[in-house]
Image (tube, rainbow, N blue to C red; front, side, top):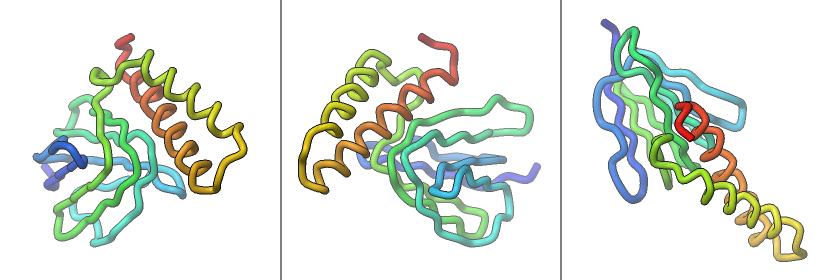
Length: 138
């Protein structure tokens, strides 16, 4: 079986460390896929859903991630993100409230930095809601 080592690290905890056969990350240009023996590279990750398969035939695993980077080197993939959550760890009501608050912040006349922070909060909240829906857990 063709696999590679995957390590996903969030700023507050190790999220996953083990073998993987396929991986998809969110980037500015859309989803980017990685499989065994992928060429060496570095990519910027945007807030979105990461999906990965641990073994052939296994179900996809999902994680809501915030911005970060991915490094692929010699069949070893390292993902560093600010946050990573499994669908069952996401509080749907809290994510909906966060999204609403971020939308309200976007409407206020603030500095460009505050506007960008609100955009990032909204993107993270919407990602969490989208990823929560991947499991059927409500």
